[in-house]
Amino acid sequence: MFDFDRLDKLIHEKGRLAIMTMLAARPNWPFQDLKAELKMSDGNLITHLRALHQAGYVAYRKEILTRPQTRYELTGRGRKAFQNYLQVLEEMVQSTKH
Image (cartoon, rainbow, N blue to C red; front, side):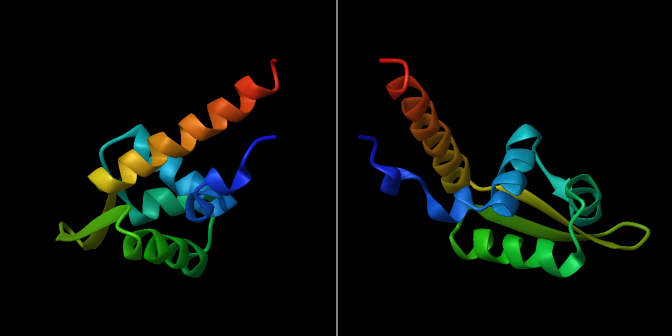
């Protein structure tokens, strides 16, 4: 039987999984673009981003262009955690083929 405790519970939550997937797809995302792509409210998105940031998975930087903007990106730790998460999922899939 597969050990489901190996799944990173922080990443496994639907909203955070979506954020991690988006951040893994390109170097960084402005908050407003993440919000639009993921169709999340400000409060919901910031709550998930805060949890990922506190775990060391996501970093952010504030810029002032024509208006203030916050950009988010995966940290090295976050990228490694996400790759491990995907590996565990792949192992789960493979275990069903035997």
